[in-house]
Length: 424
Image 1 (cartoon, rainbow, N blue to C red):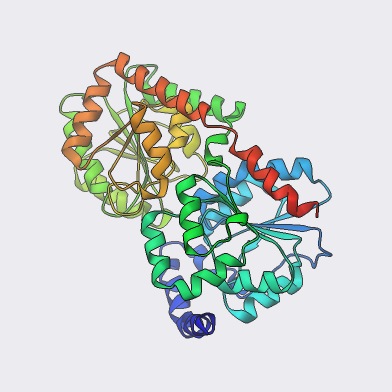
Image 2 (tube, rainbow, N blue to C red; image 1 turned 45 degrees about the vertical axis):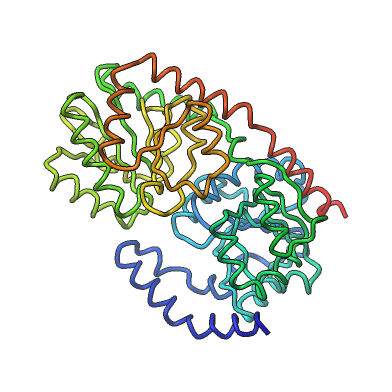
């Protein structure tokens, strides 16, 4: 009954969802495209069961899925991977990361007819969902078709668990239908079990975001950017990555305080969502800073702030900076992936809202690799202290790299879980 009510509500909300897509398309035109895919009309060719469907809702999950996709492609060349997402930025990252080596489309909305159309055409061997994107009708439809569903790199914060408790009559049947949950941490696993996941279906495998690889191409690009941005070592670079609405003003305020003591510092500011690029550019200009846009110029001479309005370059940016602030953390968004700068051996700063990365953030904080700032004043003070001491930067950066390397291995554990369902 709960899923029936959920389905009816979803159908009733569909016009509002479409209006929201239209609204977002005023800033990001890609939201106006490919609507048929969202209703289950996949452009992929019909399959005969040789498809592994992997769903990564947006950019962060796509990046986390890169090593997993490559591992599955190497181990199971007889299967074709279909990688889906829900956002244009996620779609861009899928195309950039995998090219033609995978099939790709948007995942269907979680309505009965859209999911049925999609599964009838794709007919996957199994579904792998990255992290938290659980849809009751999709999971139920897979169960009816004997399609195993694995939640990979699963995480469930205390905050999210409390929200699921309020809809337990819907959440419990959904979780009991999962074939396996490969959880990042034992606390995540315990929350899933408490909500209704069978204990036999839960396994703690670790966080595969620690298994990222810095290939030679991205290392070369990072070295080139570092030389360019620093003016061959004359400027210090402060990267503010994946910032959200409400954070940019705080970052700009902190940078203004930094520049009063470190007058050669360069801020590289990378908003999380492309539709906000122009708005953030105006904030920088209004604050009186000279601004350049990465998409329009490679030159940073005489520039105070470089707006990172390009796509797919953030990993190299982390390798080109002296200090990295990871956004989504000064506002109650839960934080973004601080493991990426840690892997480069870069000192990491964040805000206090870290519930999306509870365990990883605690490891970095306890290990002296990351500091938490609650406001612009604290962020400026921490940055100035690091900029004024190369020894302190190196110590924090080395700790970050050691922690990132010590926590590798989750990918192999996850692949072992998936193996059971591919080989059965």
